[in-house]
Every structure is written in structure tokens, then in C-alpha cells.
Length: 337
Image (cartoon, rainbow, N blue to C red; front, side, top):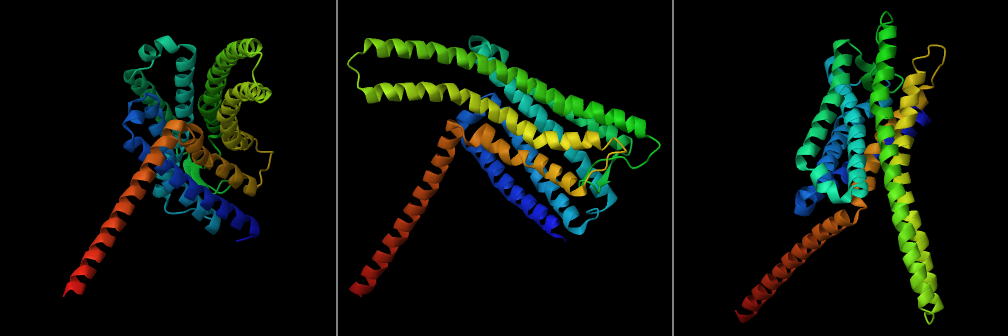
């Protein structure tokens, strides 16, 4: 292996470790906290988490083997199954993010009717559509023998093996990425920009009330006034940063890979294999960022895993105290004898 292959392999190994640990932590928080399970968005988050875990356990290791050996990992049937799952899981992840953004849009823009608009039944219908949508493309690709090992991406994925069906493959690829990446991006931008508009409106109302209060409180200390003004500024920036993170990570992780897949359709444009593998690794990195963007950095998840840690530490301290007590008792018995 050359230096570039070593760097790409180490990068992918780091992605696998962080993705596995972070997604397992989200799963543990979901199973531990009844409050998280009661919330409708939890259905979308657990669907996204399971997709990321399967991607981490099944697809990333085979891609790592493909990078190291520079050849197809496993037999043809295994590669076809893994490629089928990769297409399904990536599409399912994208649509799950779109579903989460739709849930936030309804919660913020229509807060009074959220409970009637977004019930468990509605979330189940959305998840059902997500699965059907995600399954349709890999089924078509498998039926047309378009699933196999791609040397450009060092992974088992959708790829063209024959040249006689090139037009069909081009149409399939364009439709696939339009109805997965582009559709999800449009939903993300529409919903989160609406959320940002409402958040800024509320910030302006709070700012007006704050300024009126500061004007009335003439005897207020300058440091308190300065802290209020700084909190105003942070409040305005908070929503913008969150929404920029949601949309930005989606584009940063998926756009290079999707653009490379579309450019690949042009025969006259050569693509560097190292870039192909890197774009694949960037798409995998979404499985690393999702747990932090959608779950672990939220207050409820922080509280849950802190409760888990405290319970484990308390149990270990109780066990150590019990062992210490038993040791002292045994020493007393020996002394008495």
C-alpha cells in the first residue's frame, strides 16, 4: 500500500470507531430513557441510528478491505448483498433526516396543532414510505445487475458492468440521486429555513421586551446590561448555527459523492481513484456526525447519558464499599481468633 492508501485506511478506521461508539450510545439512551421513547421524533432518530450502525458494521469494513487489497472483498453474492444494503441504507438515512426536519417544521411553525398533525401513526406512515422509497432503487439495480464492486470507490455499490445498457444506467443514476439526495436537500432547506424565520421572529419580540425592560430599569448595573445584550446576540446566533449545521453537514458529507457519481457518467471525464474513495469516506462520515447533530448534543440526551454514567459509578462505588466491608469483617474475625 502507498501513503495515500494508508491515510485513507486510517481515516476510515477512525470513522468506524467513532461511528460505532456514538451510534451505540444513542441507542442506549433511547432504550434507557422512557421520555425519549415517548417522543415522536425518537422513531426517526432510531431509524437513522440503526441505518448508521448497519452501515458501520457491514459496509465500512468491506470498503476498508477493498482499499487495502485493491480488489473485491468477498464473493460476488456477498458483494451484491452489501451493495444492495448500502444503497438502501444511504437513501433511508437521507429520507430520515428529511423526516426529522419536517417534524421540527411542524413543531415550530404549527405548535398548537403539532400533537394532531404528528402522531405515532403519522410517523409510522412516514417511516413506511421512507422504507419503500429506499428499497425501490436497490431492487431495480439488483434486477438489472447493476450492483457489484466498483474499483473507483473500492466498495460494493451500484455500478455499471456492461456497456450495452449505458443509457438506462444514466437515467437510473440521475433519477436515483434526484429522488434521494436532491429531494432530501430541498426538504431540509425548505423546512429549516421556515424554522429559522420563526425563530428570528421570536428573537425580535424577545429583544424588544428586553430593551424596554433595560430602558425602564435606569438603576441597573452596567455589567448586567452588558450581559443582557450579549445574551441577545447569542440568542440570535443560536438558531442560525443549528440550522447551518443540519444543512451544512448534509451537503458536506453527501454532495462530493453524489457529484462524483454524476460526473462518472461522462465518459470523457477521468476521475482519480483516490478522490473516489475519499468521496465515499465523506459519505460514510455522515454516520459519525448524525449522532452528535441530532441526538447526543441535545439537553435530553446529555441528561440521559449522564444519568447512566452516574448510575454506573454509584453501582461501582457500592460494590467497592461492600468489598471493603467484607474485608474489614474478615480481618476482625482473624484478629479475634
